[in-house]
Amino acid sequence: MTPNHKLNPNNWIKLYSDYLFNYTILRVNDREIAQDLVSETFLSGLKSIVNFKGKASERTWLTSILKRKIIDHYRKINSNKGKAVVKMHYKNTSEFEGDWLEERVADSFDKTAEGIIENSELGDAIYHCISKLPEKQAQIFKMKTIIGYETEVICNELDITSSNLWVQIHRARTALAACLEKNWFKA
Amino acid sequence: MKKLFISHEQAKHICDKRQYDEATFPERVKLSIRIAWCRLTKAYSKKNNELTSTIKQADMSCLNQTEREKLQHQFEKELRKL
Image 1 (cartoon, rainbow over the protein chains, first blue to last red):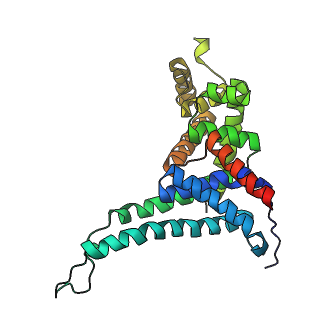
Image 2 (image 1 turned 60 degrees about the vertical axis):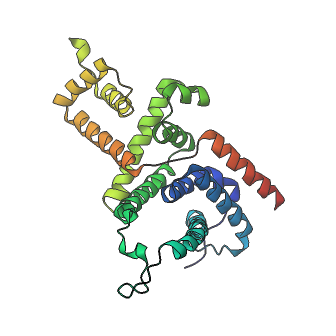
Image 3 (image 1 turned 60 degrees about the horizontal axis):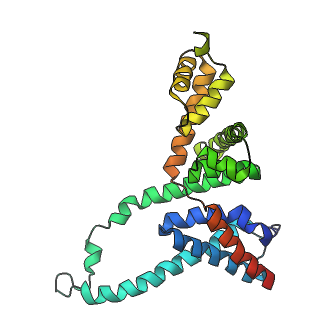
């Protein structure tokens, strides 16, 4: 594959911060940790610019850095938990010799893991479609639909009329429905 | 009586507002009447409702203004060091 992707860090926050934040929060379930991980991802990205070969898109490249950050985050948590498990849960009987107690307990996380992955993929597809919208339209749509701000708050914040807001919302929803139809439901 | 009948464009507008629970009761009645006899409005409404449930299902999050500004500030500080 010919390297044809270029990096433009000046646009990273504008283009990818919401996508990466959504990706992270579904996996760590904590707003502050998610923000820190996204911030660290951008900073690592800056430091690794020289390593970028242009074979993947900016978003894919940043996501791969973020994935490593998330794994490191869990590794850090689990390294502490692991020490406690050794002391508390190791059962040394002849029948279960070498088995971990936790291996024989149903993991409630597994029941929802599939759902989380599916939601995450759906979220990725929606963010992919949002990234194709004009900037202002995407901003209005996210404020209204994802954050859930009142119409009045958005109008004051962005200095637009309510009828203008609804026109933008209508255009965004129409474009999103078409994009998801093509990329998610038919894929 | 005439006021109960709305155009397809008006119906789409009300349908959009309804996705965010911002359509008034009279508006919802007018929309229901339109949906009952207009195939186009019915199709639009169905698609719009599907989009809403898809977005809800994805349980999405994004940064609010303050969080984004904080992130931008940190990032610009690092960017200037390059």
